[in-house]
Length: 194
Image 1 (tube, rainbow, N blue to C red):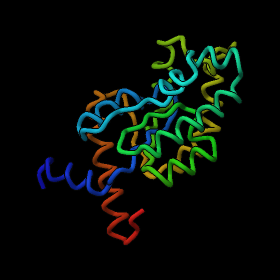
Image 2 (cartoon, rainbow, N blue to C red; image 1 turned 90 degrees about the vertical axis):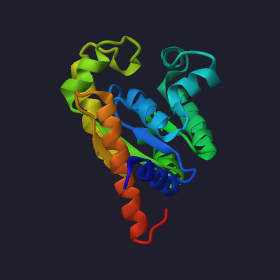
Image 3 (tube, rainbow, N blue to C red; image 1 turned 90 degrees about the horizontal axis):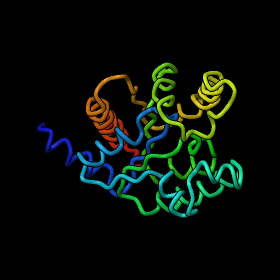
Image 4 (cartoon, helix red, strand yellow; image 1 turned 120 degrees about the vertical axis):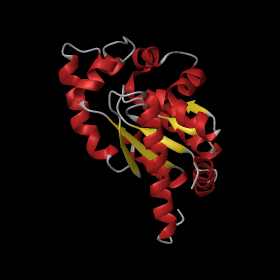
C-alpha cells in the first residue's frame, strides 16, 4: 500500500473525529501536531491558544487573576466546543486530559494519542520557556516529577501511545500516523467502529 493509499485509508477510518494529542508540557504536542495536521490536510488547533483567545488574556494571567480552577473550567468549555467541531488535530494542555469530563468527551468524540516523553527530555524542553505557570515553584524539577507521577497513569488511558524522543519531530509525526492507522484499522477490524 502506498503512503497515499495509507493516508486515504486513515482519513476514511477517522471520519470527522478529531485527533486529540495529550501529554505533558514539552512532549511535543504542538510541534508534532502541526506536522501530523499538515500531512493529513487537517487544521491544527492548540487548545491553550483557543483558551487565551476566549479569555482575552494569557494562560499565565488567567492563573494569576482567576486561579487554576477557573482556568480548568474554561478549558473544559473550549475543548468541548473544539471536539464537537471535529475534523482537526487538537493539541491539548498538559492538564486537560486529567479532567474526567474532558477525558470522557475526548475519548467519545475523538481519537486520543498520548505523546509520552521521559523526565529529562521534558525538563530540558520546558526549561527553555518561562511561560509554564505550574513550574514556577522553588523546585521545578521536583514539581515536574510530581506532575508526571500523577498524570502518566491517566494519560495511559489514551487510545494510542507514541513515545516522543529527542529525534526530528517529523519522525515522531510519522510514528504517530502509523500508530493511529494501526489502532483504527484494528478497531474497525474487530467490529468496533467507535
